[in-house]
Length: 586
Image (cartoon, rainbow, N blue to C red):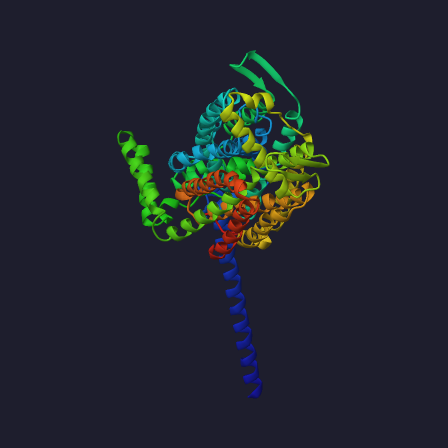
């Protein structure tokens, strides 16, 4: 009986095992069939052009997939003449003040006005450029702006009086304001968040070029008299011709070969055009076929933006389809864009960056544009008082080992003497005015530029680790301390060190603020915000350059307290800024 039961149990076990084996075989066959069907379906999709469904990619994902390579290097090379054009327009006047002092009958106040007038033109056009860039695109305005600037600078170069120079420099500033702000947005929108901060700092590495050109040209006495007392070409005009005309012309020519910003196109719902640009960048950077670009579809940013931004973008899209309503609609878009900056959540951040930029450039450009003049004052003082000299007007005795404040006092007295002589005797300045242009002045300016170059490189390596906010806070407090310390400078070497540190760190902070700004605000407001940001900075530059010579006449400490104290105050205000490093563009 027990044998029968064991036999039945064994039979039952074998039956169960056979059943399980059959089930496993059937499952494997089904899985294999399903896999074969999937493969066949995928092959059919590839054969008949049906793409596999993928998640939609945002801008940061799309730009990251293009990788970093030849296109980015080429873009930075093209950005060089663009940056030079903007920098030269705002800085060339500071280098010709000593050389043109006699030809243009310049006093200290005239020199301050020549430094400031370009910023006046920039202020007057800031919002105009911002509006057109955020509604019409980046590339067109870059090309147009640089070509117009080159044409205006021809008239600046051949001007024969300080009044005509001021007029044309004003219009030069009016034009160049747009390309600089647009360039900042354009560069940020063609780089991923991992390298964006470094790229924004890279635009400041060309500070050594202008003093080098000044060193090679200005110390020489070049004079061409075409019509005496009517049309004459002097050394400082040759310098202006070299610096002011080729860079913007070359910049406009090169930018014409670049694509439109894909981020701007995505914000306008033109994803097909943006995708083509992403594919081209990918192909240039990797050498692969554009069809291998892994992103197949982009998100529709028109639907992701908030209601106000969406309404503006939709109106822009509608105006492209309805040409009869084009002008009124775009005008309304401009007003809506402008009003968004004064509403939450943008009001607080916009006011904050405007105040900080005003303070940074108030101090930075006041001292930066007067640094060549300070070096010229030191050189002129050493020529006038090689050992011990006596100022017969104020009965003061000066020594060649005097500190910076003593040298500045001597220059102020000399300037006042020239002004008094001009009031009493017509053209007396031409008879007694002597141009003192020492090559050493521009050698020191080159050293300052080289230090700035190294400073920007160092900042570029640490910006991702430290962050824009920390660079702004500690950098401005440090540079402000250097600015105030000018009062204690004892010689040209200490003046050079303090000036280099102040200008370098303050410039890095200004660029870091712009880099933060392009990350804080959305695409539809970005260039408008940057334009107004620079407008406030230029208002500060004008006020600083106008106040600086007046403060020099009151004493040595007030001008340096002005530039240094303002920088320290801005550093404290930067504590309120949000962190932006490695943040995706909105």
